[in-house]
Length: 170
Image 1: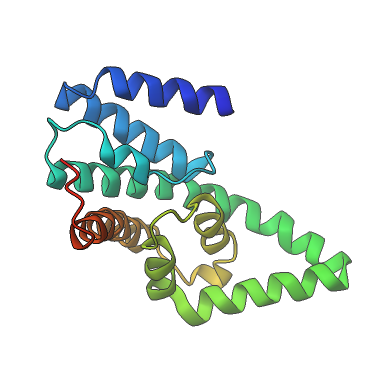
Image 2: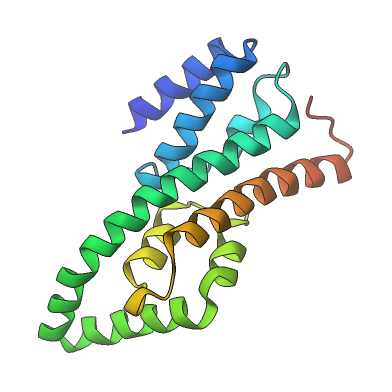
């Protein structure tokens, strides 16, 4: 897994002066980070000085949205077996109930807040919110829209922090 990440980062560094190829690869990286790669994606925002900050933010948001759609359907299909396991073990049942309560209580707003935190590993919260989506609390369209908005917000927060510190990124 580490070799795959390093290879993708090396490739992104090589294509950073071509905004179209860089954006496509950054999109794929953002999708992969949402589905399987337990790594923050913000590092990729610092590459490709030829690509607009706005484009990078949109690409990050779109990658997060597409990845979250796939995760949503994985979560929906995994929820049943997890609930069956919860019926067998009391401790696990309490953990599942707590996760369902968090998802139900905080919903889209909670997901947005968590996913907007820079350097947050996206994989775990996206899966938790999709798996413990008790009785269809969340709809896939809004789930994707929230992840799109949170991805754009993350990029904006990263750039704003660096700007406030007087560090010019690009």
